[in-house]
Amino acid sequence: MSTSSVDEVSDKELMSRHAQGDPHAFGLLVTRHRERMWAVALRTLGDPEEAADALQDAFLSAFRAAGRFRGDAAVTTWLHRIVVNACLDRLRRKSIRPATPMGDEAKIDALAPKLPDPTDGHGTLLDVTAALSELPFEQRAALILVDMMGYAVDDAAEFLDVPPGTIKSRCARGRARLAPRLAHLRNRQARGNVQDTDK
Image (cartoon, helix red, strand yellow):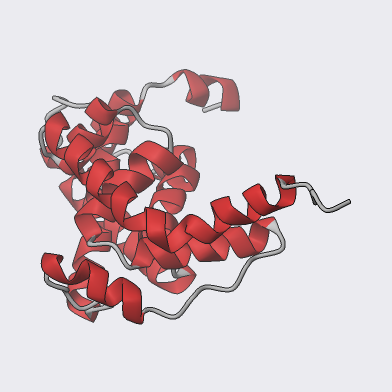
C-alpha cells in the first residue's frame, strides 16, 4: 500500500481489516493516532514512564478488543476511552495519589508547600502538572481533555463514558481546586504590569 492510499483508508476500514487478519492494519492505526494518545496519557499521569506503560497497555487492549469494535463511535473515541481507562487502572494499581476526602481542601491547601515562582514556560508547565496531579482522577481527566487537549465537552463525555453535564461539573470543580494552587502564576503577571507610583 502506498502512503497516499494508506492516508485515504478510514480508521473504521483499518479496524475491519485488522479484524479480518490484515497484519499491518492495526500498526497503521497506532502510527496515525499514537502522538495524540501519548499526549493524553502523559498529561493524565504526569510521568513519562507511567504514561508509556499505560499507552502500551492501552494499545495491547485495543489490539485484542478490535474484533469486538462495533463502530458505534469513532475509532479515535474508542481509543481515547481505552487510553484513559488504562491510565485510571495504573493510578488505582500504583496508588500514585491516595484519595482525599472532599471536605479537606482548605486544610490541605493551608498545609501544602508554596510553589516556587516560575521564571519561564517550563516552570509554569511543572507547576500546572504538579497541581493537576493533586486533583481526583475524574476531574483531572476532564480538564485535560477539555482545557488542555481542546476537545468539546460532548467529545470528552463520550471518551469518559459519562453525560456531558458530568464533564462540565468535573471541569468546574477541578478549575476551582486549581485556582488557589496556580494563583501565583496570575499574580506574577499582574505584578509585572504594576508601575511604581513613587517615581
